[in-house]
Image (tube, rainbow, N blue to C red):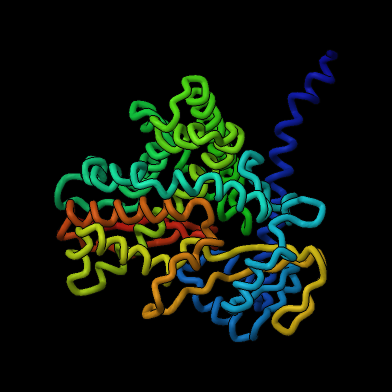
Amino acid sequence: MSATTAEASAARPDDEIREVGRRLQLTRAGIWFAGNQGDPYAMILRATDDDSTPWEERIRAHGTWFRSDLLGAWVTADPAVTDRVLGDPRFGTLDRAGHRPDADLLPIAAEFPEYERPELARLHALAAPALSGTALFGAERAEAEAPVRALLPVDGAVFDLVGDVVRPYVGALVLRLLGVAEGERAEAVRPLTRCGPQLDARFTPQTLAVARDSAAAVREVAALVRELVAREAATGAGGTAGLVGALLGRGVAPRDVERIGLILAVGAPEPAATVVANTVRALLSGSGEWADARRTAAASAAVDRTLLVRPPTRLERRVAHEDVRLGGRRIRADDQVVVVVTPGAPDAPRDVSRTGPHLGLALPVVRLAATTAVSALARALPGLKAAGPALTRPRSPVVRAYARFPVCAH
């Protein structure tokens, strides 16, 4: 190889990084411009406010559909239309060519792809028996308090509930459920936490540093899951080492186990941490409710209520695979449709399965992690109080993830 060729090859990765950064900036600029023109969907995607409710109400005020011309999407916050879109096989996650919409503008880790409904349904059916097994979850419910207490600071200190306690706890729980050995979890928690922005990166561009770091974290987690599956398959554990062993023991193909494991490892922790924080905020504002949450049943009911009234994923995108007449509009093939996941009424029946399409495979793990964390925190910190405003993470329109939630024990 000549010196000139070698220099060109060495420069290529930097050129690719600069190109990714340019696309992210241009996409962000387009969203910003649309917001300046009064587009409420663009304002949601900006995610500069801690509460997106005013912009969601603006979308609802337009009727069944809001057309975001500048961003090229039909947007709905109508619950009936939402359910139709998410349940109609004429709408897909990918376009008719099998590509993720705006993939060139919103790059994410290739190891964490979008799956169409039939494939997700197949993976869900394979995972459901193991995810619903009481043997898998029972021990965690009984043993949650010790790891939570280990993460707490000294009494009276102000700390970040989400960053210091909830995210590390949830990450370790997910790793434990998968079957990662205890001695390996502390190091593996960090990339799980860094994966969080990937869920938001499908809708709004992250900074170049965050985009690269979260994509690198997904690659680390994917390698961890592959290694875990290969090790369990080689030893023939047959269900003795968590979910991975349980699935292999049921005869699930290793490649499918890898996909299920990665979906849970990347897709569960950040939504679960958000559900915990939202539940704690709601309980602390209610008279006597925080004390009741030490009981698992009360914590579970509080988590279900949070899943209903403050869904941990607020946006879903679909692509029409054929012309569809819906909600008084003709949606043409290849049109993008964005669903704003509307909260349920606080006094509505507790049908948390309504959140299923938005959390999919990860919902059982999100519920388990949130319930055990809330009940353990209530037992460990009966005098817990907010110590300042809770702030959401910038550029998080989907999860509304927390940047900081300062609390103290009394």
